[in-house]
Image 1 (tube, rainbow, N blue to C red):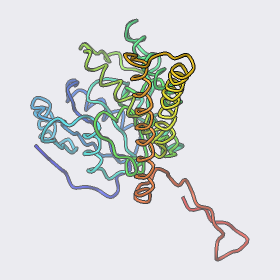
Image 2: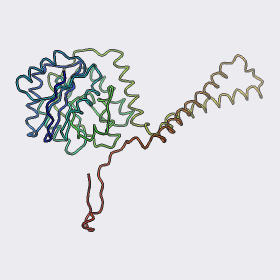
Image 3: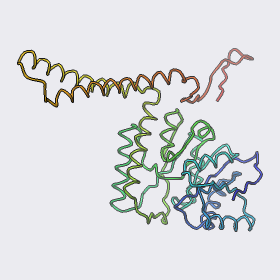
Image 4: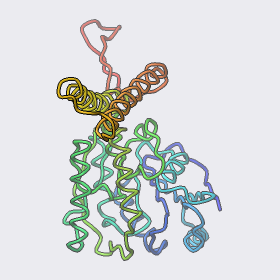
Length: 331
């Protein structure tokens, strides 16, 4: 199903609701979101993106459309992930400001206006459900995840799992999301130089996750953190990472080989049947390979660097040609 209403040029706010595996009653949640958006007093549009076959949710949306409600529904051919669903929904938006909301209860609908107003002073605002409900294990898991991200990226956030965000249109025009990168949108936006804020919002009392996280979910999360680590800190400088590790590994191997040579020449120790010689030699080879990998990455970036952009111009200040005594600011 793909129902697209006529796009309007006077829309101020576009709301994207990606519908994945976790979802609640579509009609009830829609009315709550609509009530929260009406408090803004701005023109808005809503885009639902069905990430894969969501027949029950699609049926509920069709019923709402039949009742005269106005929104857009985009159905993806299969399940691609929330990040891809957000980008697909963004392609249908018209507003200058984008709000993303989950397809299940996370925050009180009255907090939507708070997010939308806060983005006027920033480029991206993410919700921080505070005070946060949940059991002891859930609090420990969240704390470990965010502390690990703080150590890896040096950026301090408290609730990256919250799907309620407000951002200016240019953020998604510059950043392309895929996989599970929707959780790390604030980190990627900060890397591009966008102004990112986290504000406290009231958590919905119905925000309850009744499922269970499996080992593969934690493994994927750790792999995602490794990916973000490289994207945020070493995208344009791979030699600083691989070069340091490679040089250290090469140095350790070289010192070990040198000591074995001294033992052979000075102390007449035999080298045959000594695993230390093999390990030292392998360390030297591994170190050279890591260093070469970082150098190869630098060459690729140097060759294609002009085609990539990882910065964002905040404003340009120049002298006004009509009046040399004034300056003009171009956002």
